[in-house]
Length: 438
Image (tube, rainbow, N blue to C red):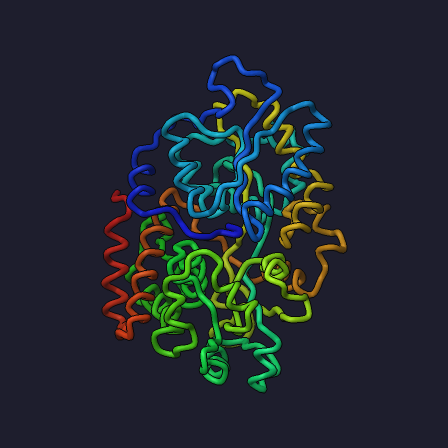
């Protein structure tokens, strides 16, 4: 997902997903009230350093669309902490936007509600054709074998950012390539109020993204091939424990990070309090905190041994933002025109440059703006060592249930309590019990 941030509260997410049926979303611009089709509403996800920064970036681009088409776009930038619940509420009430951003990991879950417009060949042709998009991005837009529920908008991957000043002060010349090296380097850096690695322990989505990567490296994706939860296997337990142990055992993550939920680790990084962060396309955020490009370096996320690659060398989930249309919009023609505009070559270059992400549109991706050293690592990761989260209907419940389990384990670690395999398995068993049965 994007930047994908704090997930919605578990009880609300589960109850809403249990309630949704094939009802559509709705158009906040009318719902059949006779409003002019020269208007549509758009919920954008918070991609930049703040909601206000997003409004500024997007308003300038949307103004071009309004001038070209005469269609007024009512923009709302929704924080990640609210986005999933807002969308789920819209699918049940029938009152939502015409067009919206969704984290790509939610695609299959939201597809299962029946509220989103399917992107069949005919709809893709209206925005220039499916073959304009990178196929791996399309693969994260809905369940396998079904028409995608959304169109890729921004592509991202996790990379390891390292603070050059803190590394130099500790006499370290290069970032870690393996987790053993991470622990070794981390212990040299951590101390006197400084910490090696930042985390967002109360951010459910961040928790899921990282334990999914650890899971891939340990040989599990937390679901069986037929889509059933498999949270308590030895591989799943080892994956979650390995991540939490960066705080609990190796003590290279500050205990206070257990309470972080919304970009605080980026602020610590910019203030020379934390030497490394694992993040998606963070350069825009660093600049907003006063960092210069020369202040930080970027490297692939570490692996267990060897080099990043397919299989156990996976070092990122396929991150990104997709753009969807509510099926019962009052302005389908305008909505499709807006999606076409936002995914045009020119807008893909402009928007992804502004957000430091990679265009999922092939022609735009070839622009020199996306060939910086940092973005080359992102592109290489997406091409060779990233895996999509399972595109199953219960994916959003997975994020909430297992993300909460990891949050609770970080809280135990922050309190100085041991995080044993038995405790990890107990928390994961509780998470699995919260998943839909049958």
